[in-house]
Image 1 (tube, rainbow, N blue to C red):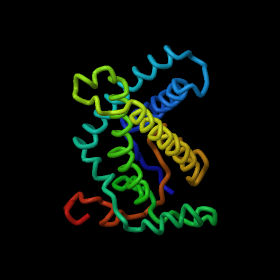
Image 2 (image 1 turned 60 degrees about the vertical axis):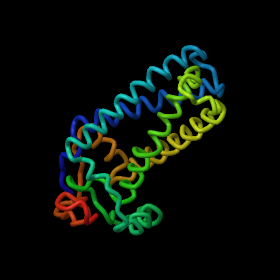
Image 3 (image 1 turned 45 degrees about the vertical axis):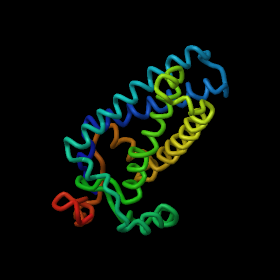
Image 4 (image 1 turned 90 degrees about the horizontal axis):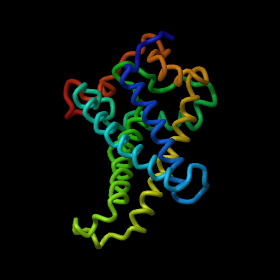
Length: 216
């Protein structure tokens, strides 16, 4: 193994900020739904709305960062070695096998991660933010010509997406324990330095179109 600086300061800060905001949104959101009463309805709504706006701003900042730094290439989906990676997490990891797609500076995410993060960032999070936005501005629907929308329908979608995000968080936390040590990935996201296999070359498809995006 060799220690490599894999995650920049911004990536780490953004990651932990996202985790904190998502946890606050889930906690206050479920209280608003009446699952429990800790903060009180009005306080939960206020914190939920402020956190939601902050989350939205940070998301746009992340999109800007991804495209200005070229890191968007790390998220280009591919089916190469997808089956091998899926098999590894289902069977190989319990047999002590090596990961079929080790992390590298130019390829931080394996095929399964690329697809998951792309679906999360391009579909799930925008839909959650959009339904939250419309939920918040319910009183303006008539002025916007959206009186045909049902508040119950939008609220239900918002709740469904919240459960989907919660499911991702649970799986994501579990996956952080699958490194060569239980806390290896978590430590890397704190310090930026991660232990990766020495001498592993980045395959052409893992370069994610750095030379020619059309080929991926």
